[in-house]
Image 1: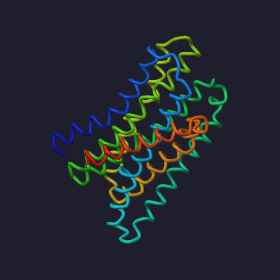
Image 2: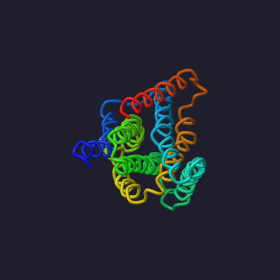
Image 3: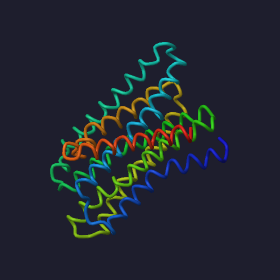
Image 4: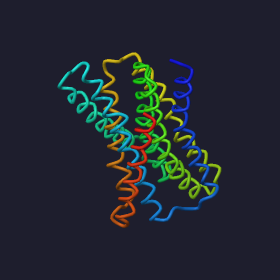
Length: 256
């Protein structure tokens, strides 16, 4: 790994957390989000995550799987993708069956939900950089960075989404900021785990990349799009998805 590639990896690993913290800091400036703004922000986040899953995870998964599976490269990609969704279902069930979860107030439930869904995001970044490390290609590193930037962009409103309810519940902007920041700490931690796993287990890279894509798409389908309430502002939400997808596509193609 060159010095430049190391710098790109460090930036990509930390930027998702830093943007979550930046979003949480907005609690000191913003009181609440209007329904229209909420629709646009969540729609935009959905578009970013969908595009990131396709260009930075599923396509590299198919390319790597071709080495081991030839013309049947879609098999590990499809299986890994579905396992990612199943992982999120299991994580959700474990969360809701927890005795701690049943006693939590609504802001705390949101905090737990964001924390859980940040895990596959961190893994996705780690797997992408792990894949880049095994190829040694600058293009692969910048593609991984594009994924990190895409996730970081949607982490900005996510940090605020956690911070605002805690601010309202505790009447403390500082506490809202604190819990918003904490919700993003798992991303760099699991990014490191992902890098280590992908770097030393090259044969399962296609499965891991697709797994992360499946987990992210599941979060979009189950949480982000329903919470955006597209039925209330369908055109705003749809354009939010389109713009988010287009931005992530540009980032990935331009940087990759």
